[in-house]
Length: 192
Image 1 (tube, helix red, strand yellow):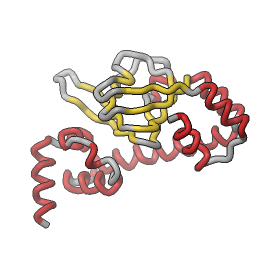
Image 2: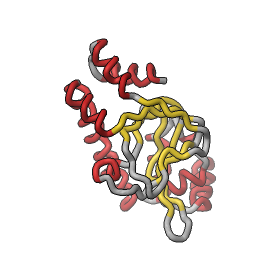
Image 3: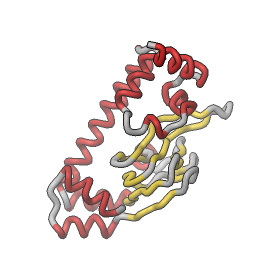
């Protein structure tokens, strides 16, 4: 799975053999079983993490025990808690595998070091962060301006490769609607 990560990078940027070996030297492969945690609330997140196989979700649990899903990360996506990584504060989130998953972890210090030594990697990271910010902005806008049905249709359109891999109650949590509302929306959309 480390080769999967290197191939992902090579599709985006040009890397010399030396740079590839440098990345490999700091990369840690973490295999997760379904339902195994990568991060638990209260722990400090110390890695940049790339999903090379499987599917994970990032979520929090409120005082009533209600789960709030922030995002899903499948193959070719990055995951983690950027706020905890940057500040060193304990995370407010959990990350758990929804499927058996393989994650490439690089410590914060090692990631900073390889980004300094490989400028095109640093540029790629900045592009990814900018796109992530835009995705977050669009999600916030959708949550405050779209109907539940529009949010669901938007989710399906933007996530065609994972929509069938996620239980409906988790999609409902991600969209901020009840499972009953999502069930009603799905029933109505199949009748159209």
